[in-house]
Length: 118
Image (cartoon, rainbow, N blue to C red; front, top):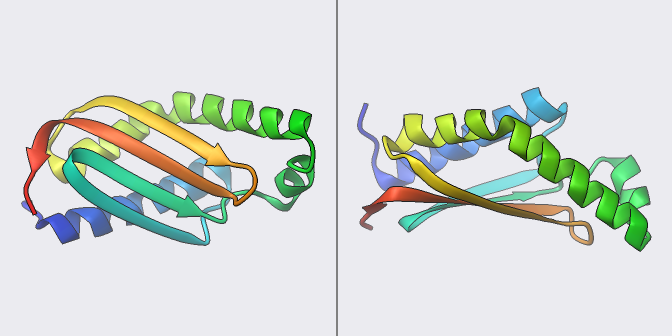
């Protein structure tokens, strides 16, 4: 099926929310996806569990959360790349991600092997 850019963004958002819920047991409170040139940018808000918010009150806890979440993403990377490929028909060249332990926000940037026009 061929999607418009807006439809792709919506489908990716829904699929990433579903992945977060299935893979990690809870999903974000807000999510938005934007496609810019050859990048898919996914912004997830409200992803920290209450226990993680408590841990994030000191530097050791922040580092622990970041390390754990990074390992979880690496384990789930094939599924994440599959979502992007299924919706965009493009291959993921690289995946960049970070989580803010202050705001409870995570950003994914998927770099693709083709560009999308507005």
